[in-house]
Length: 278
Image 1 (tube, rainbow, N blue to C red):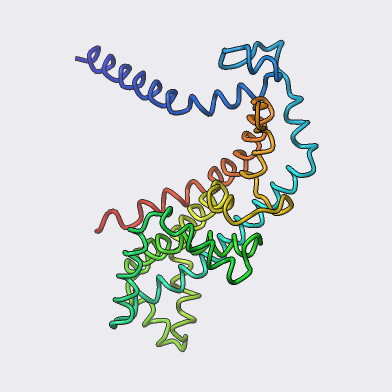
Image 2 (image 1 turned 90 degrees about the vertical axis):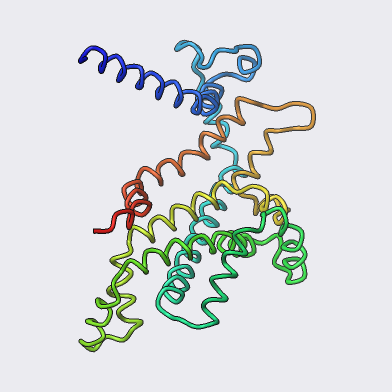
């Protein structure tokens, strides 16, 4: 029985590792291609180059590109700013729909559900026309506004669940001690809901960092392009520089990985909080 259990456990591990390898294959191929020369990227079909053929010049060339550095800074600015706006707006709105009752709040919740049902492709043209009429297209402010509002519905619903799990008696105790309701929200509710706020921040940051379509529609100036738009410079009309493109993609992936590694424990707490009631 012990031998059969060990064999089953080993088979499970083999299956899980193989499954993860298949999903990670595109990322591994991207990393391997970034370590090859331009000619080797087109002729060498191995996943990684031989140790003697590893070439780091692609990363040096990409980082020395002033426009690429500017695209990277634009992505940092847009992602961080949209994350801050989304977290602040979602925290206030989520608390309002969690604690207050009335037809206005019920209608707001129904509107959030409706917004979640709409496909993103459906709002692209109206968004561009509205931004153009307001003269905020081709601006980082418009891109920040677009990113923060597009993720707001999900963030509000997520934080509403967190605020619903916090007993109102805690706020009542704070208000009996002389704290206002808004003061109890700042001093009591927000610290308790830190995992939820971190989850919303992670979701908003990763979504803004990886977004391409809306940035392609709204941004035309080279000086305002984000990192995903900046990678297009390696894709020309008749050829693609796969080694430089892969190196740029690896560099663009690093901030997201570091951010997720730093906030992973908060993400797990945020996704599992309230799963067990006791």
